[in-house]
Image (cartoon, rainbow, N blue to C red; front, side, top):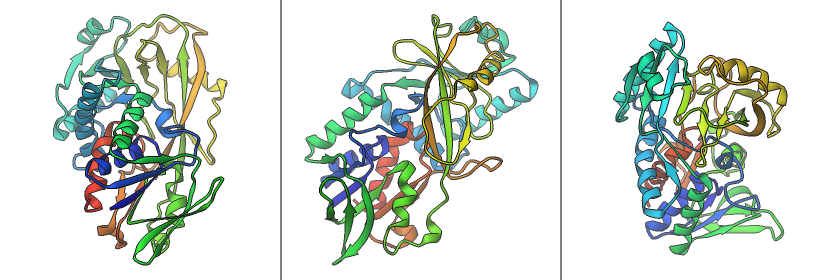
Length: 364
């Protein structure tokens, strides 16, 4: 089977790799000049545990399974990573109840090693931390996301797959029982194939709307949430990731580490109308207030604007978070077509598991 995957982010690359490993001919079309320049390059690079998401949801299933697959891939392929652990912290009684509920949800989802700590136990792990209670997730970690994507690309190409850069796909139609993908770029044309996976992330809805025969009512609205990150200029004060209790639209302004140990904070949640990656330095004022709830020792002037990512959400302010959407032939009735919508956090963690699910939907 000849398969076209649209989008060379981590989910698109993982899906292409899974299909190639199953013996299919795979081409990945990417509009940008390189792999992984969008959502996949602008996140916290966290390997999530899977305790936040409702039991039975796609986010829960694929995060837990994906984390196990991701750690195994990192070990087998020499991808830089570290299971540094994470503390989700409470600073009020209400937040303590929230993190206890997160623990229960995680246990229901099959997350291993979760442990509720009191304030003294948490401070023994992280002396600079201020909290009333904390939830320890020892298997949460960090990964070199670009190294991961290079490894996925390598496996794909080793199995005969290819990546076409500077190749925006502008529409999908049916021709003689197959799909024909219209593409632009320097030499525009059509690409015939047996199956298509739309893993275009921020542009997934636009491509779905240009898919011949795909019902317009199945295209969900796209809601953009910018997450801003600020870097810390001093020496690291923590050895684990520190997350506050979740907030509307995200997981709160948390502390993450890169593989060199550098601390950074974010993302916040900024609802926007158009794709724009600029970080407003003025948002740093709110970061100081949020961070000092769990780290009162944050020095003045220690935060600098770093980067921003944009989450392809399906719901907006005041609405419950939507689950991942994997819309395949069994749902919409068109053969050989899968549209992926709303693949935001924990999309990187879930990528290898999502890839297998997509391949299964195609009957591959």
